[in-house]
Amino acid sequence: MGEMTDKAKAAGNKLAGNVKEGIGKMTDNERLEAEGKAQQAKGTAQNVSGTVKGKLGDDI
Image 1 (spheres, rainbow, N blue to C red):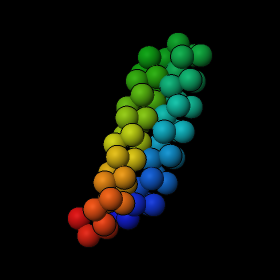
Image 2 (cartoon, rainbow, N blue to C red):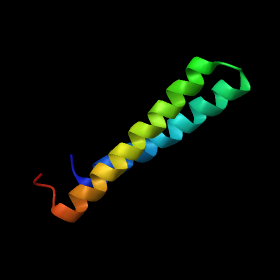
Image 3 (spheres, one colour):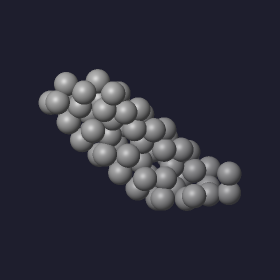
């Protein structure tokens, strides 16, 4: 995957995770809230990966 692909997926995961976390908080569903936080963390990791690929090139 290239830099832009990683960053696009990161944005999607952060958004979806934020929504899940919010719904989990509103419905008092701890599992859904935790899934949302985990998905946001995945998005953060993907964003870092995309940034590194952008700096080093897509050949890594």
